[in-house]
Amino acid sequence: MEHEGKTGGNRFDGVQSSWIEGDDTRRLRTHFHNRHEIILIESGSSHYEIEGRKYEASSGSLVAISRLERHEVRVVDRPYARRFLLVDPAFFQEAVREIPLASLFRSRPAGYRHLVRLEGEDYRRIRDWLARLHDETQREEPFRELAVQSLLRLFVLDLFRRAPGMFPVRENQAAFRKVAEAQSLIERRYLDRSLDVDAVAAAVFCSPDHLSHAFKRLTGYSVMQYAGLQRLAHAKALLHDGDDPVAVVCTRSGFGDVSHFIRAFRKATGLTPLQFRRRSR
Image (tube, rainbow, N blue to C red; front, side, top):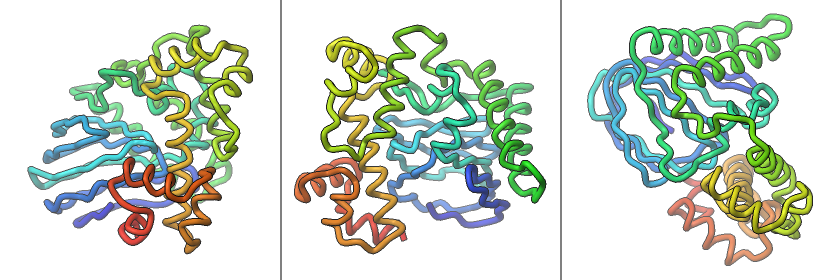
């Protein structure tokens, strides 16, 4: 993502936290993150398109985007200032283990809205949490990782109370636990080409039909679509970070056929793997 203007940011292994004020009104290209993203708009406004769903974001808007979701931003009113977090999925999972809280990024059922508007005390508290996370990630202090992890968990908990619409799962029910177990299994084994619905269902002691229905209803994805998106996210990281040929990236990402990999990549991103490599750099 490209930014212009005044920025304040840093890089911490698990969380990247930044404050940006810029007048960039160019349309940001459709892009991805292999990290989850939270954005709080402080001034100005923009148009977001996330997996085909369109939103108007202005001061007080909070946006949550999972690492699997393609999105595009167009600034329409300036000065445009926002705070954001980019969170490593593994770090988030370690910090936020409760199924309802984790649904902030893991569930996208039909009708889900990625944006809420915060006002008054709700806005101030969420802004303060983001500021505290930003400050902590800049500190070279003992147990910094533990401190950031603890703040992240408390931030998500407070957000759960103040913006419940961003959390598709509200209770820790048995069906939700089965789906969460299946998601965790897929996230560990998505590179395994033998992974299929039957294998996932057997591992979580559930019938394939029941798991497929519950998984789609609660997450918005089919079981194999979720696995495919994990593979594509892995491929994007390899394309961005390395120079392996496309055939090697295909194999290392769990795809068995190069032509199928290129078609799936283009369908998901609008780009070929090589086009993605050039643009992401």
